[in-house]
Image 1 (cartoon, rainbow, N blue to C red):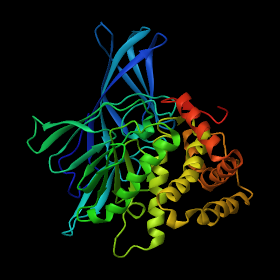
Image 2: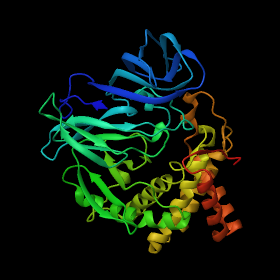
Image 3: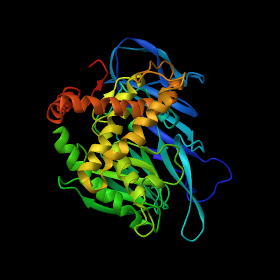
Image 4: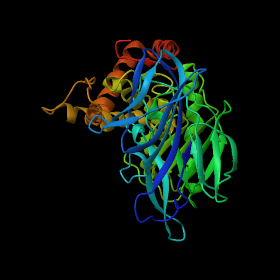
Length: 419
């Protein structure tokens, strides 16, 4: 449960703080008096552990290992093997770093400066929003509630199941979301701000919405069309249905990545999602179609089945960078989009691969600080080029069978290249 500052919409004199209460249902596999978690830029107020059917024990110390982005919770007695509940109250900073839980600055149609609160957790920044085990192979379900200003839009991975006034402040509301599927921490997302939206339903009944800056709803209609066509295509291609009841695509004013595939709440740069129906050129439309196709592919290939560790990043990104073309070619055959693959991806990969500091498609990643180094044209474009050759060699029918076997075998689990 996250409590936002009521001054979210106005320029604060300094970075505001947010309050959060996390409750973990966990299993202690070996008796211990310490719990070690990932944690960065967070101040823990209290922590306690309650074994199932027993009294809670309060942590007596918090040892922060800032370089490793970890915290050790120390308890006065041994936590015995079994299930229990860990509760942590803490304060975090709504930062300006465009990672973790951060402020995104925007201007309203009347010229006022405002701030939205948004998340960007890939690769290892969920730990900046809440203490957790911030690794892709450690999955969990998430029950998220946001306490936010009542005049703001609040979004998360799942659909809203309850919205009610917050008893301590008439200017706030508490928004509760449905429980997520089991998922990795880097895919968790929440957004609070002022947005317009357009919506439709895909042929298979999924609610699709595109959220835009206020006054620009018209510019979200093209991406909405792409998303509504893309979801059924992937469902048929993988022979695996999209598992969530909704998908939101939202344009963020300050966004470091091009887009991020958070499950059910995909975040984009404005230039990667919005199309002005009167002024945008054909290349902009094709770019938006490709980015939407890329991120929605991740809803299966990355979210439903996740890489075991960042060493296997190319499994996610190389595949999505290839199938985005297949998707756009299906949805918009008039684009003749495959003619652009050679210049946009194949030669781009060769340029980087020709350098002395090139690297294999799969690179061993040790410390999380190394992860950002492999988000490059080798993992994306060279990976896509290899998969394109593999698809052509195997043939589409057998390739699709292989994809279905892969997805159903590792459904809601993790996979490595060797699998």
